[in-house]
Image 1 (cartoon, rainbow, N blue to C red):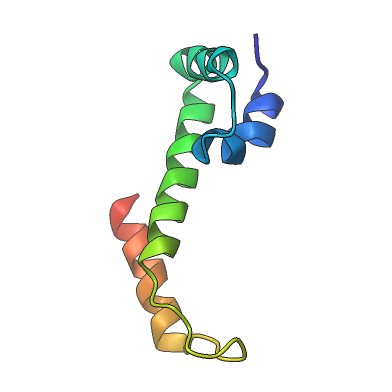
Image 2: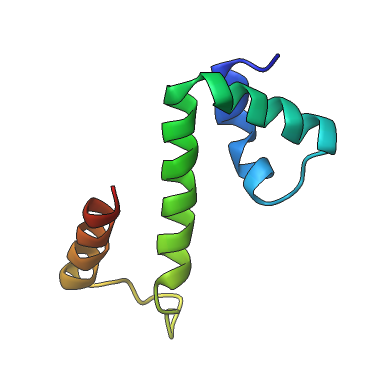
Length: 80
């Protein structure tokens, strides 16, 4: 059975589909009984979805301004 540490170390691989069937099964079995890991996993999925919705930067040197950062944090608060 996986531990909470195992979940935190493999959550990204799991979300990217890089795990075997047996590993996914163990992962979900752990999530069934551990509310803290369920919360962590939901937060990871939310973070990834939020980042994917951000507009692409036109230049690698371009950083978001404070208003954009505030909007992202506001969306995260609304979805929590």
